[in-house]
Length: 247
Image 1 (cartoon, rainbow, N blue to C red):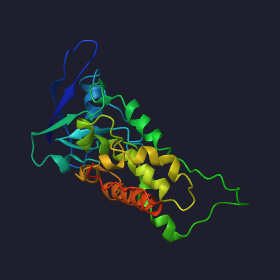
Image 2: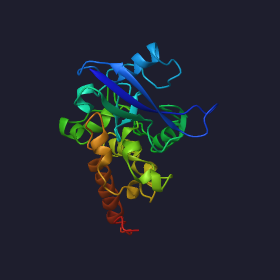
Image 3: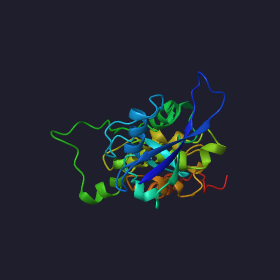
């Protein structure tokens, strides 16, 4: 079948603003959109810029906006977004991050926010002889959050960074929850200043766009709300004022 890809282009060396360019490719319904992009790059326009690596939904590098929805080009089949010969599929770079070229965005700010939640185990207790054990139930509390591939689809899908560029975003907040919910971790108070703020967990407005966009089916909005409850419980147990998210 014929597929028309309407791709948003931008070359900072020659373009003053972004523009759309159309390409027609021959594809099968079960081909991936990434296959179509590669076909264009190899046989039609070598100047087209996009990221890719594993092509199997593990690295997260080829996240883009497809017909206004965020996701991975390698996990999106032609038949998922095109239902007829000659269908037009619009592809744009992720939102809320500067465009470096075409579909490639600068993720430096995204990763700065991710690092700010200290996404690693914090535990100063004496090291056990083998490993720090936990039950299956304890692991289940945060298990899906460990599947994050940092593709930034959730960050792009979230409306909040468009209004507040300081907002940490769904990916960072989910990783914050991943560790404060870990029975082996002792870093709750270390992460608290970043999580318990208008730019942290309280910045989430429960749009659920992040959850819908996640290619790994992580319950992102739920994890952020669980973070809010953990913060409230901590403050309440200490007799401190509790933020209900209204301010």
